[in-house]
Picture 1 (cartoon, helix red, strand yellow):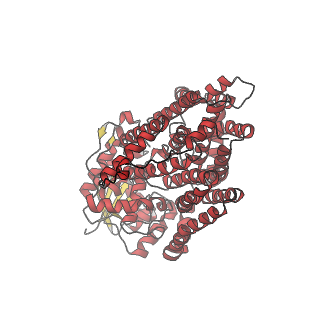
Picture 2 (tube, helix red, strand yellow):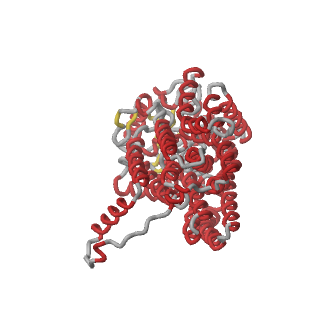
Picture 3 (cartoon, one colour):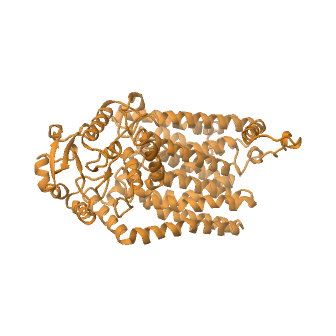
Amino acid sequence: MTTAEDAAAVRPPADPVPGAVRAGVSRGPAVRGASRVSAAWRRAAAEERAVGLASLGLLLWFLVRVRSGADLYDGSHVVALAQRIAQGDRLFADEMNAQAVGSAAGAPFVWAWIHLFGQAYLVLAYRYCYLLVAVLVGVLCYRALRTRMRPLIAFAAVTSSLVVTSYHVVGLSYNTVPTLAMVILVCCGTAAVLGPRHQARRWVVPVGLTAPLGAVSLQSLLPAVGLSLLVLAVLLWRAGRRDALWWLVGSSALVTIPVAGYFLGVVGWSAIQETVDYTVAYQRPRSTPMERLSFTTVSWLKELTTPVRLPAVLLGLSAAVPRLPVRWRRAALVAFPVVLGLTSIAALLIHKINMMRYAGSIQLYTALVMLPVCVWWVLTRGDRDVRTLLLLALPTAVVGHPMVAATTFAGPWYGEFPPASVALALATTVGVCRVVQGLTGRVDTVALKRCVLVSTVVLLITQLSTNFYSNSPWAALTPAPRGAYSGLYSGGRELWHLRLVQDTTDTWVRPGETLMVYGAVTGAFVTSGARADTNIVWLEDFGPQGSHTVDWLRRTGRVPDVVLVSTDAIQGDGIEAMMYRDPVLASLRSTHRIVAGLNYFSPAQFRSEAGFVVLRRTGS
């Protein structure tokens, strides 16, 4: 159901002929461009102007926010993967980690940045690169939703989906690329099905071009993306937009065929299969896919039913109870984000742990609680927009979540789920806005404004709860050392560790030398800019599976000039004993010698407390 005010909001005003053109006056391109922007701003309704200013404010806020935090693990891992691909190494054949496919999207930017500016400011630049891509996606999706929705609702939907990233890690990666692709699929797919018929082909092309890239970036999401495309195809067929359906098929094939040709023809199926077997083998001792899935499922069921969360859950679900007063139900939806935030504080005080520290967890939790409200709205009011959004989100909600949960070690703690939850979050955001706006039977713009304002502000506040694997941004106020992390702010143990890694690579890794890092401190590749002589950037003690690394070194003939062994990865009997026991370190015993770092080792260290034992190739 589209309300009368929504219908008026989606009708674009007629573009008047510029007076200068009518008068035959010639102006330069810059002047004409400024005139068009000024004219468009004057024509825009007050609501559109407010959305424009809010969007600008959000962008400025994020330009500052992404400068906080400089973790050397997952946040650096996505940059190190992009750097490795930019240096010429191949997916699967050299980097035996399927996550590198997502970072390959950022490799051209990293290649250009390093050639122009070296390693300086690389991490910050990579984050800003993602922001630029996210802004472009946001503009596209906002315009798509505006074919059916008023500006405030379109703004809330796009904001709720693009503000959230897995782990609070910002950068083109195996998590953000599929997230962006799913946002495009849901928004542009809805515009293609329900928007103006003559524009349907325009909206399916972005879906066809980006959905295959999102699926291949996070392979566990591939079945869900395929099902979402199938749902979109059925909706287009039933809507009688069969020409748009063929454009969807053609644009998907335009990307899928070259990508498949690259992986099967250039990389080779044997390399892909070896990477998959290697990944399964070294993950098996930690936990099986079914163990990870069951643990995450039980954790979420517990989180939905634990007494400290019940006030938020019951408040949200009460909006779907027709017997309750309308004013109560509307107020419940507006207040839900605030109450959920208060329960997070209560969980921290009572249980000493808050699973909702990361925005990805909050996004999924909110979508699950709001889903019954949106289903009730569709069944009782027949809202075609919300129904279409929910149908497009259904595959990732039902199939994507279990697949992601079964293939990640992050569990429910770090907000890993946006690639699978973003479509459902976007659909439920639109649904909640529609309920708040139209629950009384008339358009209540004031209530809608409150809902959008409260949800957006709370979402931004959650971004301040923590940096990945570190403290909150309030504790990260010290500039990072000069180099790849320049421009960022850090603090506490993270800052100490960052300085140690920067000093170690500055001291021991010379320009042009190659590097292997044994441990999770992937940031050492970023601080040094060294090429990775290893089969996987994130190399740890994988037990017997270290033989894959040894085989890779022999097959390629590559030997790292420097090996940095993170002391938290060393077993209790010390580095010397480990160099006899571990296959990787044992293979380096005859070619490398320990030159520094033994004093950093102590048993049972945390990552952020660890130093490096430095090994250099003999004679280098």
